[in-house]
Structures are given as C-alpha cells and as structure tokens.
Image (tube, rainbow, N blue to C red; front, side, top):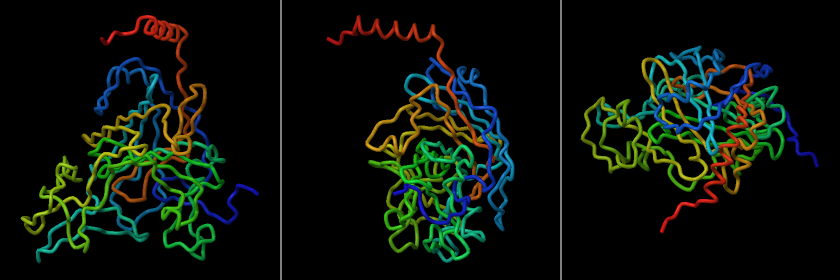
Length: 378
C-alpha cells in the first residue's frame, strides 16, 4: 500500500510556513563554524561569533494583509552559527521597531469586571494584542522540502471548506504529505517562552486525524513538565493567578514565583498577564535561548544538542550527526501577529565547517591523555 496520503490538498500559510509559489535553494549557505570557546547564552556576541560569517536575508513576503495590522512588511534578518563537540549554537537578529509582548492581556474595566483584550482580523487571528515570534523549520525527512520549503507541509481549505477531504473550521492545517515524514519546528515566542529562556520545540508529521490530535500534524515534542497555559478562572471571567501589574520587562508572563492566588486590588485600566509559564522539561525543552530587544532589534542567542536522545528523538528532532551533510531549513518572523509573518521564498542550507586535521589530532591526543591519566577522585 502506498505511503502517500490520497486526497486533494492545497498549500497555505498557517502559523509558520512559506508561500505557494515554488522557491529555490539559496546559493549562499549558512556555515556553522567550529569553536573551542565556551559560549554563554546572554544575547551578546562573544569573540567567537566574529569568526561566524552571518547569512543575511531580507524577509519581505507575507501570506496575507490583515485588515488591522500596524506591523512591519519588511525586515533585515541575519543568522550565524557555531558548533562544538556537543552543541550547535545560533545568533539571530532582525529589525523590529517595537517590542511586542502583549498576548491577550487582562484589563480591568470601569465596572470592575475583567476583560481579555482581543482584536481579531478577518481570518479570526490576532495582530494587536499578541507577541513577537520567530521560527525555524528543519527538514528531517519530507519529500519536496528542497523545492517548496515549509510550504510542503501547509494545506488550505478548499471551496467546500475541507482540508484532506475533512470539513474544517480553520483556514488550513499542517501535516506532511507522506507517512513517516517529519519536519522539526523550532518556535520562539516572546511571551510564552521568552521569560523561560527557551524555544518551543515541536514537529510536524503526517497525521490528518483531528481526533488523534486536534492540531493534525503539528505536534509538541515529548514533555515531562513545565510549559505555558492560560491564566484564567474556570468560569473564564478573570485571571486566576497574580498580583503583579503587567509590564514589558518581567511580568508580561507570570513565572512560577509570581503565580500566587489572584487578589483583586487593582484599578480600572490596570492590566495583568494572561499567560502562566514554567520551563519545559523533556524533549520539548531541548533548545535553550536568551532573547533581548534593544533599539529596534531583536537578538536571540540559542543552542541545542547536536544529537538529541530519547524514544522519539529521530522522529521529532533534526540530528546534526553528520558534519559532511547539508541541512535544509526555512525561517520566519512574526511582528505581534498570531499567523501573519515575514519570510523569504528561498530555502536555506546549513553546512558545517570541517575541523582541521591538526584540531582532530589535538582532540585525539587530549582524549588519549584523559584515558591514560584519569582524574583521581579519592
């Protein structure tokens, strides 16, 4: 029996993706340079980053124009990479004149009730009270990714309101086209993962059964704890936690230490965060990051193990286990938007700088010396 999904699909941009036209692989690759210097994730480039030539991109495509969008339509984006024996590191920057860290905040009304602020566009998505984001899609195993990029996994409703012959209320869904194909999805979210210093590590597979997974092929990596959730009472009339006013420095989400019982001592017009956060544990928390917004520029420094482990690691995660291999990826940034984003149609490639023979000899010698002269612990 064929592993190909049998139905009519149309590509679409939803949440993360690329347009329906056929992109081409960019001629200039991102080179991940070898480093022996310790890299501290602080959003500041150490001397080691000087060696790492940036891949510079202009992101100026958007999937649609919301009927109330004050965000940017073009940005200059750069990405650098380093690696060592254990980790691969990235240093990403893009221009954004505003730091957007409001995601449906609670606001106290004149009649002392509470309201989550929303201003949905014509597609039912938010571009006013939301958060800045960025994403990277890594091709694990998806036929056609090198031609269509992330669009290979994005599918829109047809004229009958169906995706993959299934009635659907959403404008589109994410899934790969062939069984056993997966794409790694790294998603940084200013409010939901910014204060926990992580990316949200997710992936896309071929599932089209909404009963098996409400988000179809878009899935979370294995998670043993932590994460983000809504700060809302059971009756959905107000915040459940917090006594700290919203600000854009350290309380646009409520960390564990701030998740105390809600006490309404606030005045009309005061705002509280509607998001509770705690660091992911498990594979979903594989990517550590530090993000800084300053003077109209986002900077994110992040790392992940070159090779991850776990029961589903090869399905959920891109494995940088072959330094001679080319790795295909695509990027996008979101300016205070739920799904609208900026991208380039080109598919990007990352390659690893090959270690010099002298470096390999030195490492081999050091490893041998450690074996011959183990450190005493008695």
